[in-house]
Image 1 (tube, rainbow, N blue to C red):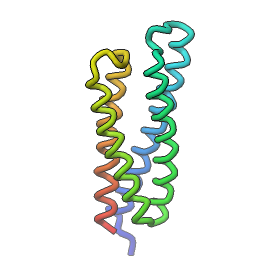
Image 2: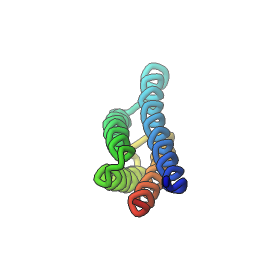
Image 3: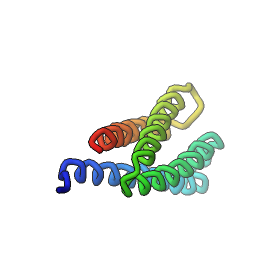
Length: 128
């Protein structure tokens, strides 16, 4: 018998990872637009953060796929990656003058989202 709660948690986890990937891609797209229209908002630091976030988005999606195939290691990897992303985004958002204001807001939103992803992965792993 399939546990509907664990299926719901897995679905929520995969939706949250999808949202993170979409936000990461949207950040890079916003940087491209800003580079053409308002270069002071698309700083080299912002580009670096956007590129790294994009790489981690791909990694997180790949690990979430492994987790979907009943991999406890995949769920553990998702939890660890999301936890690290939460910490990094909070620290980067707190560094004075390092990033444009719009990106600090984005970092705080991403930190909340990755914290949710970590919590969902931990709960799904415990349910298995």
